[in-house]
Image (cartoon, rainbow, N blue to C red; front, side, top):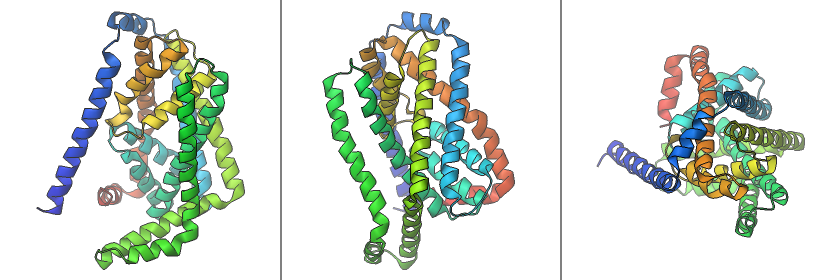
Length: 337
């Protein structure tokens, strides 16, 4: 069997698995929904709060682009607009493509646009994601002190997650200190020399990317911006809940967003349809939100996120095509598939 055919079969199996997981989660979330009340809530939706939530979402996305730009400009100076458009394109891709393909796409776009090697850009993007997850989980744990209605089982589960995430962070940050060890392992791989060289180059790029966070000033500023971003996201979720007549506090919204962030690691369809709905109907009723409204809140959140990323990601794609060259960009993306 040819490698191309194997990849197609593997892709099909993965697609069917994600559809099955999302479908099961969507069924679980929707099976007890009171559809009549859901329709009533939808008709009473306040568009002003939705517009405000969209504006907050755009600010959060621009802040994430600035945070990434801050890290990469240590490699070389380039325009913030390149980071912004690449971020918007990547976030849009995450909403419409499976397997978080947006991470690769935004790294390729920024690497070409800023003339920085792709492996380094991808490494900073991956490290950024890992750091982000750690910061979010710590914030959520702190916010639990202000959410007394939260069950003890959830608090204990967070205590289990925190050391795991901390261990991953330590491993990531120590990896560059053992670069020679990793390179020796690559030399022992039973693959052709050409592939071995490609893996070695990718590994060196990853190590260099992690080293960008070794600078204390950059790391502290990154953490500070990340806290602001997550608080902004919590505000956006509060506004969406308010548009449907529910009142979530900042701590409740932060805990909910952290749960969604953790759930995003589960294989699912683009936009995490089904998975997010299942989390919403499980968690939000703890905060006094009915199951049908919880289902609606997270669904509106997904729609707002899609619209915001599309509003900037679509024009960003055409802008970066002009800057980089459409043929060159498509060729580089095809090589990453």
